[in-house]
Image (cartoon, rainbow, N blue to C red):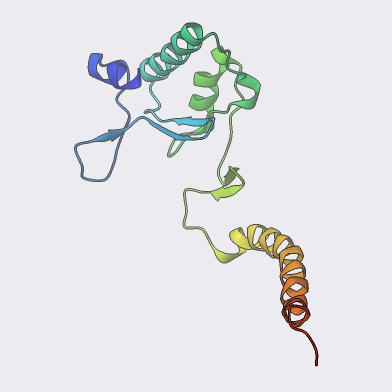
Length: 147
């Protein structure tokens, strides 16, 4: 639907570097990130597509879990764009799917909570792996008859 909206000029998406192609959405599982320029006409176009999509599928968007983020925009225009939809205005840096999302390069300290959580989950697996590996020789020896 967003491709058709781009074809008729409701949404332009964001240009990817020097490429002629544009990016209007990113999806992962049930999460969707919609991208457009910070122009009222394009925001209305994206929201119209979202509402039509929801209406066609019988779905409803939870606007309180949604947020407007601006890149190289002042907060006042973003608030004006978000107001009709009841969405909060977010700011960078933020977290998306528990990964740091920023308009500047991500540093090691930004990734520290993710690494710590990974390490804490690995501790349980390492304990289980040690238990299995240490019991393997005993199991193998139990297969043979002792003379």
